[in-house]
Image (cartoon, rainbow, N blue to C red; front, side, top):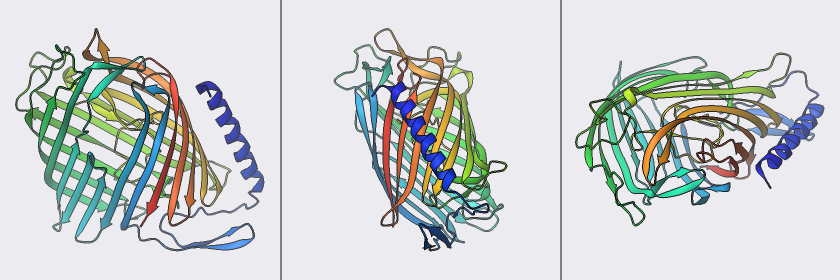
Length: 416
């Protein structure tokens, strides 16, 4: 099915299901079940009891895949497997996301008026990574490369309304130490610039503010989250990797990123109808960006979890490895609660970005591109304390770097 036809079919399906749900919605006062809250719901003439959930202690695994049509470079399908754990106590807060080759671990210890913040992340894919042009993989740009980065510092956190476990104001100042490596592969062009393996040193300042209530499926329901990060990094051994960098080269670089995401009601409508929005922006100062320090745009499901909402997000992406040195993106949508465990959403998105591209046979540079996307999603609770996510996305060409296309995503999340 071609992208335009598939999108029109999805829109028709969305309209039909939403119309059916509105016709079935006879209650003038309705309360959407919120994350962690116990309650009772009338469903098909029966009383359904929703048990309470301790959101301070959550462990889950997510399995899924995306199918790209047409393929992106040499990639047709992308498997996903992530282990997630969050535990929040008076003495400490811990959050871990583990997917073997891309991991993020944070442990914050309460010391009274401040927190000791420790953080580790790695991006160490065991495959050659190459850039894409016109939807085609440019194999001459292929390299094995990755980063490991540890951070430690001080933080200050205060609860904010509505005082759920993920509603707070956080201020953090971290020192960072890491390691970068790169190596050629069988497809690497002979004259491709390959950077040195090197130590990394830097600092990060963070401000995060979250007032969102989430619904039964942990989707944004009311309120907003906003914040930003400022990163200053130094690469100890480095060779120039950017033709547009300032005179001093890009061994040192400064990056600023910010975000806003949330949900709100629609005047005159019940809680079943929600407006959803998010906006993200980032900038690498003095043109000191390259494919190794670029922001990596994320996509797939709409950001919701308090620490995941921070990541650069473009709803039109079903592939989370798009390198950009500066970007601005906004997504807005409508979500309809078909019943208490089933949600149908429609989003439109716009993006502008300095995206990685290829000049000549293998020279990687960055050029400004803009485009739009449309996405339809279905989120549902499922058996065995699990949920699933289905989506179709069509995107105008920023992601495949000159070629439009779409894709289908399915995710299954099991809570333990």
